[in-house]
Length: 435
Image (cartoon, rainbow, N blue to C red):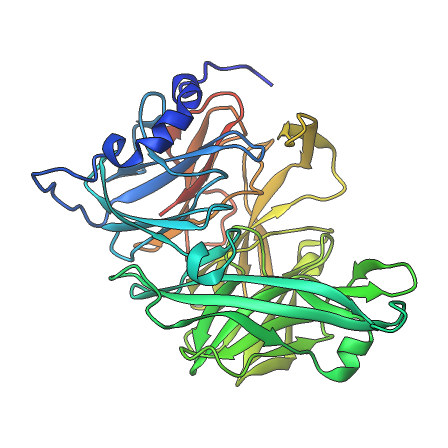
C-alpha cells in the first residue's frame, strides 16, 4: 500500500489536550451566531482503520465536480472510536455518538467544515452502560440502546444450563431537548419463548431500529449456546426484538427459519419501512445474503429475496440503502476472493478483507445488478449514503488511495455510474459516508 503524508499527525499527537478543551476548540461558545446551512451534502472521513480512529466531517454543495480533500480540512467529531453520525433530513443538524464513551453531541452545520457545537448528552448515566449504540429514528427522536446476555446455571450444582438472562437498555432521545426525559428503561427483562430458551438461543446485540404501526423493531444478532461445550454456535434462524413505541413495554422476539443470520448489521442500516408500512430487513451470515419482510408484526412467510443466488456467488454485507419504490443499493464483500491488508487491529496485527462491491437490488422483480466499482474497496465501516433528485451518491476510494464520488441513476439498470468529484486520502484513511 502506498504511503501518504498523514494530515492529522499533529492533531493525533495532541488528542488528549484536544478532548480536554473540546468546547473551546470547536467554538461552541461563539458570541455571534453563524448562518445555518441546509441541503448541502456532508461527507464523513475516518483516520485509522483500527480501534483507535478519528472522524472528520465537511460539507459540499455539489458532489459532481471538483476535488474533495481532508488534508488540513474537516471538523473533528469527538470520538474514542469511529464516531457514529446522523444528520437531520434537511442537513442543518448533526448528531454524533462517541462510541464506548456514551456521549452524544449535537451540532449545527454552518457550511464547509464549520460546525457549531450545541450541547452534549451523556446517555451512559441513565442507561448505566457506556458502550451504547445509536440510531436516529426521525427528525424528532433517536434510539440509544444496548443488550447484555449472561448464561445462567442451576444454583445447586452450577452445572445445569438454564438459559441466558438478557437485559435490554433503551432510551428514546428527544433530539430537540437532547435528553430522555422519563422515556428510558435500563433494565428491560427480555424473555424468549421457553422452547427457544431451552435450546440455547439468546440475543447478544441489537441495532438499526425502525418504527412501524406503534412498535419499534430492532435487528438482532443471535446465537445458539451449546451447553456441552460452553460455547456459542451459529444460529439457524433470524430474529428481531419488538417493543411498544414509545412506551418501550411488552418486549418480545419474533423469528423466522426462512433465512439464518444476523439482522442488526454493523454501522450500515439493515432495515427500512417501505411505502406500505412493511419492514424490509437484510439478513447476513457471512455467506448468504437475503432480504425478508416483516408484515403486521411478524415475518412474512411468503417473501424471501435470495440476493446471493441472484448474484450467483457467496457474499456478505453489513447493511444497505433503500431509495424507494422497491429499489436499494447494497455494499457487499466478495467472500472467498483474495484478501488484502486494510489496516491493523488493536494489537498492531494486520487485518485483511476481500474486496467489496456494490449491488443495485430490485425487490419487486428480485433481480440484482453488480455495479462497476473500483478495485480494492473496503466498506466494512461505511455508514450511510444518500439519494437525491433521482440519483444515488456513494464515496468510493480504496483505503489510503484516491477515489471518486460515484453517482448512479436510480431508474437505470446500467452497471456503469458516473464519476463525480475526486476524493483523496492518506495512509490508513477512508471515507465512511455521505449525508
